[in-house]
Structure formats: structure tokens, C-alpha cells
Length: 298
Picture 1 (cartoon, rainbow, N blue to C red):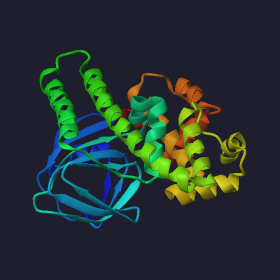
Picture 2 (picture 1 turned 90 degrees about the horizontal axis):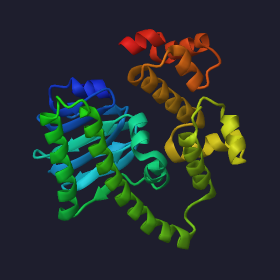
Picture 3 (picture 1 turned 180 degrees about the vertical axis):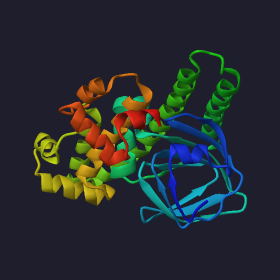
């Protein structure tokens, strides 16, 4: 790998050092790593769920130390910078990488549990016992079976996504249990600050809003706080501004509608709340470097 790597769905699928079990425009399943050259920094552009199957690894994730051992699950949210990666010679993994759009569609309102875990409590490791690992191993075996034997089935993609959704919901349940235990301590010690609570409400509001391309002021008004305060708490809790969060979610929706649906540009423009196709086209070109049609066909 390069010293500085942009890890995307496409770069994973095309990397010869990685065993890919399945990939499409929104999901990549990694079966294992054949070679792993140390890298100085990598920007992980999508969400990642990684199970360490042997050995151990450690890295800095947005400046926070993260260490992963056998039978532990590492959870990395989108747009995180990973640096100072060190792994043991016997390290291997199984991983799931997915866009924010498909993650939200899998979890629906339960995305709040994911956001709590990632951004409020900043817990990125889930430790599992042998029975729990066996539970997810069965899911993995079923997914691989569906990939290998179900290619002729007209609902092949839907079957794989249904199995993945079930596994992620199971993991989300484990995350909720961890958060419940931690929240009891937080309530007793009054550790959940007002700022974190407002940030949590902002993420919930952003994820539940169909038309996300609104101003920071509009979101702040709904939360009954000032735009300056909303930006400050977002920066403090996630390293990103409120506008960064809004833009990321808008771009995820644009990517989904252009790549995964047959809706016309005008229909997508209306769906996402853009004033007209011309403005939408300029927005897409500014962020993706190409027109909506070119991006759809790329």
C-alpha cells in the first residue's frame, strides 16, 4: 500500500493484497489480508467493521490509540484518518466496509445507537466471547454461501444485504448493551455533558431529515441553540463542523440516488431539496468534479 492511502469502496475492491469476498457500489466484504505493508496514514472514507481473527493490531484513529486483539471487533466510522499502524506477523481479519447510505438503510432509527457509540462515547472496540464469535461466524458462512451459490437468483443482492443487515443489527444490540452499562455510570457521575447531548440530538435530526441540504442555522433553530454553539460542539465531539456533517450526508444521498436508482436528474433534484437542476449540477460538479450524468455513468 502507499504511504498515504485513500481507502474507498473502489480502492478496496481493486487492491490485490486483499482477499475480497464480495463487493458492489456500497459494500465490500474482506475475507483476509495476504500482505499488509505498514502505512503512515490512511483516510477511511466509509464505515468499517473489522473482526480480528488472529494476532493483533494497533493504530492511531484521529489521534486516539486503538488496539485490536483476537475476538475483538473494531468499528470505524466514515471519514476517519488512521495513522501509525502496527500489526503482529500473524494478524488477519474479516471485515465489512460500507457506505453511510447503506448503513443508515440497514439500521434506520437504530443509527442513533451507532452514533452514540462512535461520537458520544467514542467506543470503537467490542470484545466478544467464543459463543458470540460463533454467532457471527454462522452469519459469515451463510453470506459466503449466498455469494457462491446464489448468483443466478434474481434477488441475489437483496439476500446478501438482508444477511448483512441482520448481523449488523446483532452488533448494534451488543453496542446498545455496552452503552446502557456505561450510561448508568454516566448518569450517576453526571458525565454526559449538555454539549454531548446537543450533539447527539443534532445527529438524530440530521439522520431523520429527508432534505438534509439546509443551513447550520436551520438545524440550530430546531435544536433551540445558536449556530456557533452547534458548530463548536460538533467540532469538539467529532473533529468535524456542523457544516461538514451536513455536506457529508448530502453527498451520500446524491451518490446513492445517482448510482443506485433510475430517477431522473430532475426527480433527484426535487427529492433532495435543490432549487433547480442547474444548481444541482453545479453542486455535484463542485464536489465530485463531474456533471451528474458523468458521475452516474462513471
